[in-house]
Structures are given as structure tokens and as C-alpha cells.
Image 1 (tube, helix red, strand yellow):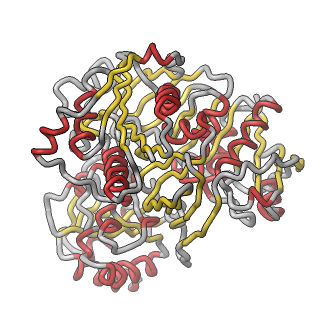
Image 2 (cartoon, chains in turn blue, green):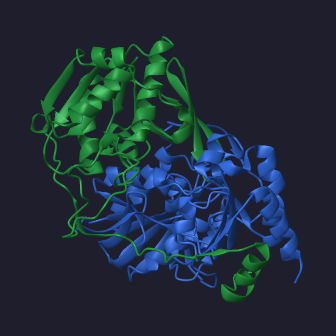
Length: 314
Length: 249
């Protein structure tokens, strides 16, 4: 059994989702190799080589892999899987993995499996459907298993490995898509999908200004990542990468604080696996209270500052 | 420029789905069905491109049973020019749908295919990417903005870290994210007009592709429910609980 993990990285650092995918790959019980395709990506290659459980890192270095554009990446991975006889290919269930894995699977003429949350055996998985309201067990006899894994369902693989490195020759540039630009949110706060504490704001915050005024001090006090409901993103309070939910990010922190979020099914799908959920909402009948461990009914504009002040006192 | 828009009939997003008592699937009988919301956004985008004089024709296509004609009529009422139903009563998985859509694309020769990024029933998020691969075309998934300029498109994508803008040659596949647009409501006159628009039915078997399911979906189950929590009286009690009961801060 040979298992390939496709690394997501920015040529310098691996994305957290890759570490979750590596630990999922180890459950196949075979040899785990990691593909790092990029440009001047030695730092990402060596980071991958130092992850526990990785036997070998395959690196492909070329200008047309720099921006991680999917057409070239999928073609490279498909060739590699065929030539070297990989039995399974995994990627993290991030926007990167979701973009790549189905394309790769189609090139290999196999059915991909998305968002796997548990691996019973190679070809036997469980995944959520209907916004996480149903869990389905899936069986696949495909000769090459292609899957994305839900990052919150697998621990991040730890450092401490010592993989061998092998350089691959790049394939030709297909010259399809071209990166025009990226506007990536810069934040000193923990990454939303990997944070131990997440504080999320919804429509109840009423504006972007109020969102920042109320939520940022709470995030700062708790060392938390900031998230939001779809309603808050649609209303323009915060950028799209804050969105938690069925079609946004899936999070499962130790503590999730939902502020002014009513709790639509689509939002619950993104956070209901959190260990402890706190909801602050003025509507005592808001559905968010059905999933929260601790509910506080009241005006968030009073409650949250009070909470921030209270947390300062030991 | 022709635009092809695949649409899927799914359980309406407001419905709370239930697992069948034998766990073989989800209860669909008597359940309200609707066009997949992301596909609705795709139809809207295509119709706007036609209204802007950029697209010449918008073709909606659905793969599935005869009842999918309802979904196609919704797309027609929103402004699609004509529709194609690739009819089969067989279970269709994304790889099979990708192959059927490829066969349709080869017949229709669209310059652009706009799919929803995922269907809200199986949440697979695969079909657009699969179709792009099978056609050998570029793909821009999770689009929040689409600009067409002669032979190329510029697409802003919603990615985990923020936004990313790509430029791709046509033909290409784009998949819609939530913020691409806000779909219009079909007006009654347009619903009536849609009934007269052409809707071709092609038996899936006529397309000569292998649509046999590759995956077996066995046991369906509802996830363990969270046990009901408590309401706390005030902020002080909340902090006390978080510190001493839950021990998360």
C-alpha cells in the first residue's frame, strides 16, 4: 500500500490541512509519501520531510507550480500516481484540496470521495452529507482511492520525522490558468480552522464597525480566531474567509463562542463538533441554543464587553 | 458565446432531512424539492451575461429522472433559453454526471460552463472539477466574481485565506460560490413563458457513457445529537462555568 498526500503550501510553509491529511494517510497502514510541487519551495519540502510518519517527500520544482494552479498540479499528480502505482491519494478538505482532488480523480477515471471524517479501512469511509445532518458510510473498490479529509476529524501529524527526499522532473506547463492576484487576509490571530478557541459573530452585530468593536477585544482576550456566520459575511461585516458553515470553513475548537448568531442549519454544520459551545443571543428561542452548552440570553452589546472585562479578572 | 448551466434537483434547503428507518438513505417521499441553490446562482450569472450582450444563449441541463424537468423549468423561468434533460432513473454519482455533461458539451460546444460549487444534498463539491478535467479545460472554482473579456475570463475565487483572482482562456468551467450574485425570483409571466421554451429529453443511454455508480453508500445515520445545554443567568455564571466546569479557559 502506497499512499500519496498532496501538500498545500505557499512554497515556504505547509498549510495546516496537510498535516491532518498526513495523519489520515497513516490510517491506510502503508507507506506515506508527500508531493510538494512548487517553485523555490525548499523550505516547504524540508518541513514535509520532518513530519512524523512521512517516508518520502517528492518535490517538483518549476515556475509553473509556484502559484499552485490546479491544472498543472492535477496533471503532475495524476502522472505520478499512475507511474508509481499509488493506491491512494489524499488532500486536506480545504479550498485547495476540494479544487484539486476531483480533477485529479477524473484524470485517473476514479470516483473521488469528499470530506472523509473516518477511515475504517482503505476504501471504507464515513462522510457527512446534507450539511452534516446525515453521516453515510461509503465503500469504494477504485484501484486508486482519491479523497479529501475533513481537517477537524484528524489530528495534525506532529514533527519529528526524517523522510528521504526525491526530486521529480516537472511536467510541461499546460498554460491554462494564470494567477492575477491574491488578497489574503493577514492576521496575527490563530488560523480559524486550527484555533483552540473561536469567537464568531453574526447578523446581530449589525455592522462591520460594531463587529470589530465587539468581537476583536473578545478574540484578543481569549487568544481566539475570529469567525462569522454567512449572514455577517453577506452583509459585508467581514471578509469571506471568516465564514463558518456548510459552505465555509468547518471548525471544531475546544471552545466556540457564537455571538449574535441565530444558528441556521448551514452554520451549525460548520461548528457543531466544537467541544464546548457558548451562545450569546437576545432571542431566547434562537436555534443556536439547541446546540450550545452554555446559553446567555441578552443584548450582546452589553454582554460581550462585560465578558471581556470579567475574563480579565482571575 | 453559449453558456451551459448544469442544474440539480435537490431537497429544499429549508427541509430538515430524515434518515429512512432502514438506514438505506434519506427520506425523499413527500419532501419539498428545489433547484440546488448554487445552481440557481449559476443560472443567474449566465442570464446576466446574456442580458449584458456577452452570451448569446443560455442552456440549462439536468441529469436524472423525468421530474428534473421541473428544475429545468425553474432555470427557464429565470431566463435560460432552452433546456436539456439527460434522462435516467439510475443513481448518478458526480463522475457519471461529469461524463454525461461532457457528452452534452461536445454536442453543444459551449464556451463556458457555470456549475454550482456543490449540491446541498451530497455536499460532494466535485462535478465542475470533474467536467473540467474530462474536457481538458481550465477551471475556476468557488467564484465570487466573473468577468468575460473576449476569449478569456477573469474569476475571483473565495479561497481559505481570502480571495484569489485567476485568468483563464475559454472554454472553461466556473463553479459558483454564494456571493457571485443574488438570484432573481422568477415572475409569474416568466414562469408561464418558460412552459413554452424548448426542453429536449435525451435518454442517458444514447450518450454512450458508462454511468454505473462506483461508490456504494451503505449505512446512513444521523450524527449523535449534542445534549441540551443550560442557560446561564449572567456573564459571571458563564465565566464560572467555562473556568471550572468546562475548563476551556
